[in-house]
Length: 344
Image (cartoon, rainbow, N blue to C red; front, top):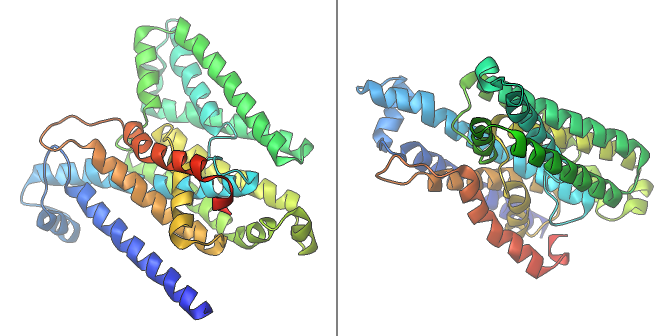
């Protein structure tokens, strides 16, 4: 029976990886300028093409965007799984602790707050300034949450604290929006729509390193999380230090969700929906399998969303948050209708 289950999980992983590879190729050839699969393979192997425009589009635009989708999908889905286990809440996502709200507040302060004094922060700092502002905002919020977690042991109280901080950040952002200039307001709204196409190669390298650290930490938490699902008493009886696991989990989630929000803006529903799809397919709550498989599902989901943003035959590209929401909302509704028991 165990061998059968192992073979079934291996089969699921192999099929899902093949689907991801297919989606990667579709995403690479899809867009206002269509590049054939043979041209893509030629670009991969020869690092060049008979058409210089294809080479520029491929290496400067599409490949960084697809790799960003892979890193972001992996990061958000794993952080969502960790949050759902921590709070034992199927609707918990990577942003419930205020990471997204903190990043939004940081960007709002820098973009719209500076405009109130006649300064254009984006012109002063460039796009890197927005990333820096998001990093500072999400980092400060998570430090605040971490300090609160040292005093509060109840995870539901911690969840409510995160939601309250998010509401407070939203209120302050509203003030900035009311007082900001039209140009700064437009810049902020564009940031909230999310983007996979604005990441440069150096930014992608930095983001990948941070996400890799967060994923490795989460893999070390797989066994303690499995035991924790059986209840606090069982976890303590098995020698699991709950406080230490919770603190490490918060650090991992901060690295995973904070880095993606800083570089790509808030990306909705991937963190909530992907872990549930992984559970539904694998029918297991074993985190040693769910962590990597949720990552693969998150990658597939974000690649699909990115493909749907490209309207064939036109240069018009939809905001990535629109397509992630269209994919994620039905799944979240299904979770609500199905009830809480289905996720354990």
